[in-house]
Length: 190
Image (cartoon, rainbow, N blue to C red):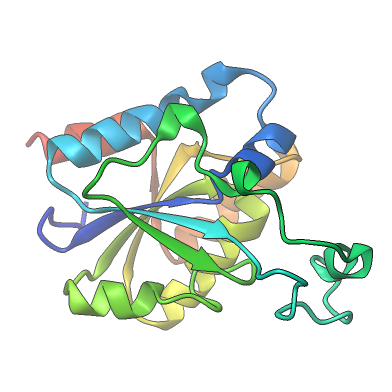
C-alpha cells in the first residue's frame, strides 16, 4: 500500500440520494461504504464527499452533453434539495468536506483539486457510484494529475456487473491499487 494516513483522502463520490436510489437495490450494498467511512474517521483520514449539482435553470449544461443534456431540456428548477443530499446512511460528519461538481469527474467544475493541494494530499482512496462513471472519470483525471490512487472495489457500484468487473480487474489496476475495504482497513492497522 502506497498511501500514508497524513497525505490521503477518502473520496465518497456521487453518494447522493438521487443516485443511490437509482443504483442501490438493497441497503446492504452500502455496508462497504459505511465501513470505509468508519475506517477513514478512525485513522483521521480526511473524507471528501463529491456530488453532482447544478444551478437553477441548468446554465452549466450544454445540449450537446449526452449524459446531462436531457436534464436541461426538461427545464424547470434545479434538482430538489433532498435529492442532492448525501444518503442518510453515509451522513457526513462536521469535519468532512462536501464538494459540488458539474460533470462526471470529481474534478470537473469543482474545487476538489484546490482542496487536495491545500491539504497536501497526494493519495486518493476512491469509492462511489457508478464505477463506469464518476470512479472511472475521476481515476483517469487523478492519474493524469499524478495522484497516488487506490480503488475500494467493494465500495464501488455500477448498473452493469460485467462492466464493473472489467474495470476493477483489468482497467483500474493499470493506474491504481485495487483492494477491498477490509484489505484497506487492515493495511492501515499495520
